Amino acid sequence: SGTICIEAALHVCQMPPFFYRKEKFQFNRLGFLGINPKEIMEKIDKEIKVSEKKDKIVGYDNVLACVKSAQKNAKVAGVSKSIYFARADVDWLDTKFDEKSVDLIITKPPIDSNKVDMKKIEKIYDELFYQADYILKEKGSIVLIASKKDLILSVLKKYNFSLASEKVFYQGKMPLFVLKLNRKSKILNRDLVK
Image (cartoon, rainbow, N blue to C red; front, side):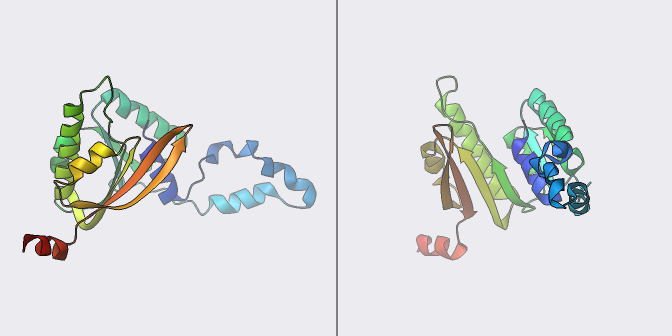
């Protein structure tokens, strides 16, 4: 659906999520207090910075139908000019970005389930961390959103990343873990080699 990219673009552009539905805001009914809601909204609208640089926020998916849906959703949200969407597999990221050129990777990787083989999921995680090691800047981070974290953390041990922080949110009754991963310190790595 492109949710992560769309939310990032809304944040970067300083655009409220319901920009095109503001006539439905309860705020509009406060005119009787001597407030001019339309005037206030117009002032806020001038602060929006719609970016047409599509190299800042990039969204990839390996399913073309998902890419098309994300593009439509971005257009509805009014941020389609700020996001570049395309179809690509995780193992092609090193061909899409220069070495050490990406500040942040945010993704919701697939999880092991009855429908998907755990070995296949582990291979995707391996490839994600391998590619991230190549394209992320030295101070770059990875943020993963997952309903299960055990497999991610076990695969992570093989790579130059460590868990920097963890938060838990709930989608209904299902927990979602937000894991922030940073590169391991080079000094720490030298100490481990000794």
